[in-house]
Length: 230
Ligand SMILES: NC(=O)CC[C@H](N)C(=O)O
Image (cartoon, rainbow, N blue to C red; front, top):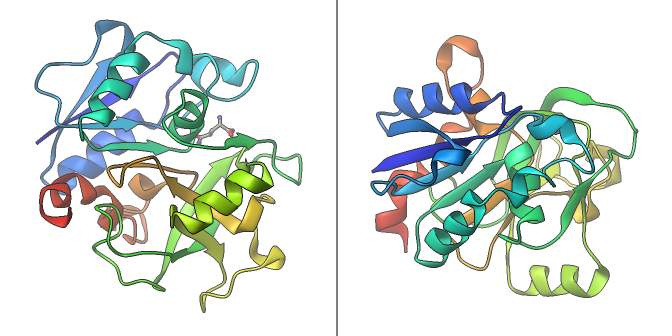
């Protein structure tokens, strides 16, 4: 298992992801996007940050890098892909999954800890938890409001592709515990396959015991659980 963490100009959570994976004994390396996807890649992280200064829309420019075509191809072959925060924005912008992330309802950058409810526990990213579990993970974004048209939203719900929703400590969701105004409190969704996921919160910042809660570890362990969970 070798996870390639794709660095774009302006990525800034690539090293956080590398350290979190190393802590879990998962082999990881940072890959500059212009260098293309290494042949030994068996997992991919699109990390957080401010790729290309969030110009146009967050993630819009990185999504046009030629490496994204390679990543789409790898994803279609079953290579697990996790987009975190800016990486989630790149994932949506490049068609790895549905919907888009846009400006927070508050119109402010928000940096805080949130609670997430695990919506299903039969994907590589959530098999470490039970459905309904509540985990604590940080957010740090200005464009984290998940938007999608109502018809596609219904399809996503019916296809059971919602992975995480913002909630309170007890797992209740609703507008009062929605930090950015995301549709249906959505914090993370699956792509066409269970092996592709994008999420706005940062599991890599909730993985090292020295710096706070470690609830995010289970999500990153998806890279090793992928072989056993599907
Ligand atoms: N932490 C991040 O990845 C931030 C994502 C993006 N730059 C935003 O502000 O929405």
